[in-house]
Image 1: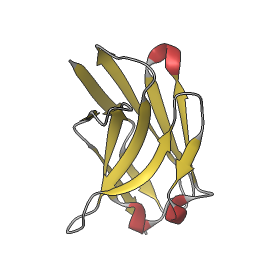
Image 2: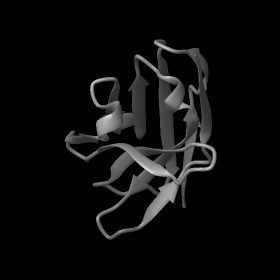
Image 3: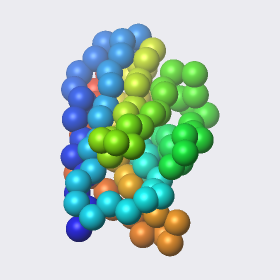
Image 4: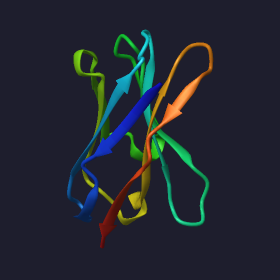
Length: 116
């Protein structure tokens, strides 16, 4: 069983930065894909960023140039560096870990609030 634990969320001012971390534990098999999604109040969960096992990254257009995803395979950890934050980035951010067979697990979510 795999568990994901997110950390690093909180409150930031517009233009500020936060760094989210997500560490996986348990029966983790490689290769795997790690990523971040977010859900704002009253909206559906949306894709933010994903990083493939060997480093390829995919970033959603609305955060491209502001957010960076990276991973430390030795520590089973994925990071989301969020710069130039905007109030519309306010959401609960979820970490995900997926495999090529379509199976995936999710973290419990972490709140990010950006004040104007």
